[in-house]
Image (cartoon, rainbow, N blue to C red; front, side):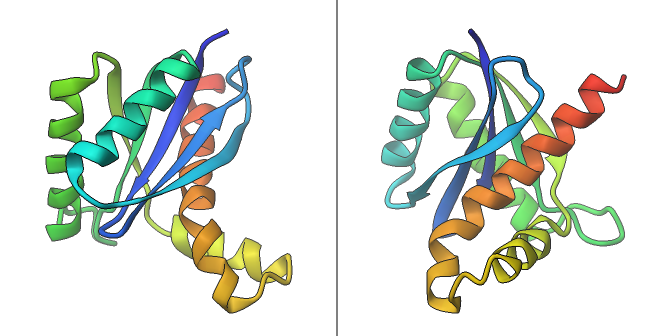
Length: 139
């Protein structure tokens, strides 16, 4: 039963989402509080091994004009470190507006502002992964 992992890489946290075994839906899984890249990647590697992950989809925060900015460069550098340790295919998915969508979902659910931070990154990761799954399943 293989799964796909979605990552929303930020400066302070990494949101993690996982697909279901049929690769149809994405669910928020965990928010990793960033400390050192080595420890962040240790946790990602644990999840990859525990959940039999065959593909990692990483959100790439492009600018609205589709260009790559400083935040995209940080994400790509982090992914380069992951690739040195984890032998799993990694692809990028455009993540523009996923944080806005996530915030909207949390507001609709009446989650208090101070509690949104604990959920927003893993929900953004699930939007990133779901858009990849939808595109893959629909050809």
